[in-house]
Image (cartoon, rainbow, N blue to C red; front, side):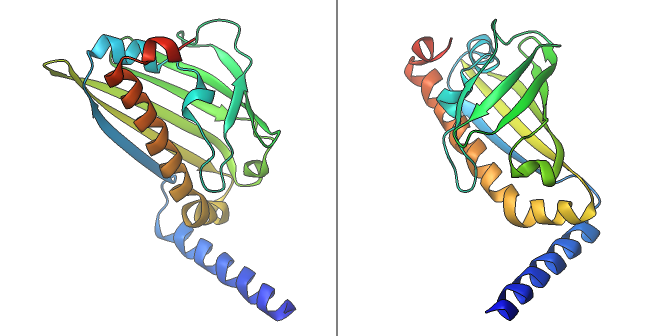
Length: 187
């Protein structure tokens, strides 16, 4: 049985190393949606949305249960601690906010097992007014790995779960905005 685990570990390591060597870019995933809502409504709801409302457990990733923010999350330079259902935390900082166009943030200081794999996560949102009360949103997550080996591990074991987590969160946001429930789901 020990031989099996050693073989499995070496195989995972080799696959991770092959992935890391094949692509020098940071692992990333992007989700997009067209939302039937005015641009300003979508932007003003999504930027300060309650993270516990949209981030439910997905695969290996725990749900968010709360944040410690003291005021509405809408200005560049703001920071908050994010608390997960497994007891771990991370620090999130809002880097840029361009009204009705885009915003970006950084997630770091992980206390979960992610601290061994990633330096930080960079998130970017871009909003495009399509007219007729529709907006296209693009949400990108880039995971900045600790090194080339962890880059491969992230691509192999984590990126698919992150994509699923973001797809589910975006589906919740889309449903909130299109149904009119967003007025009750924000802070």
